[in-house]
Image (tube, rainbow, N blue to C red):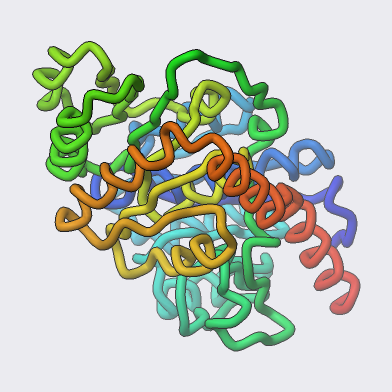
Length: 333
């Protein structure tokens, strides 16, 4: 197996969409982009070809293949890995358990790397990535684990964000591709009670919230690629997943609502000074709105939080992952 990434064939097995969100697809895309930049050949294998985010892979020129529901998933992965002589298989998803990964390893010689979001680390892998802030303290370090936000595989679009000054503070309210419209509605309702001047773009999974646009400060849009909006955002309200890391890298202060137990990086983001924590689930709506309103007209505090976010997330995670994979190859040659 070649030890130089430019000659590798890499197969990604990732899903997105309802009940999953877009975070798995986006962080793997960041790694795939770095692979492509270094000359590797990448392919995506997914059971959710229509999920938000898959189009970004196609826009990169990365071939996308669909898993057939009638075939055993791990068998399909093995067949594609053999067909394309995959040197590495990258897996990201909570439904890919130890038995699943062992099934792939029994069929192919490809090395296996997997993203995970909390202890314990998965078995049956050559390398394991937990890119959440604070993972280096919460997970057991081994020669196979890549832990912490230093390994966050962010998309290259984050390198080219240009902040555009606006006279009216702009808020981005997003919980990704998941259907959290009821929580978004409550946050918007609390925000609407303030008379402060601001604009809010709320990214929603459905159009049930369009009625709130009667407040001219609010704009409701379906799920979009949010990174192009970052340059016009002063404050963001988000969950504690991949988007919170992207926003920190872009230097955007965030108010975080924890929506799932696997969002383990929230405490470290808050401790770093990059984020404020509003609480968990729908009960946090009022506090999220209140914290956001505090930040809207506190430029000095926002600037401090912005510096903290950029210091925490330097955007070099994908390069570090590929360097670790290369070292793994050299050790085993």
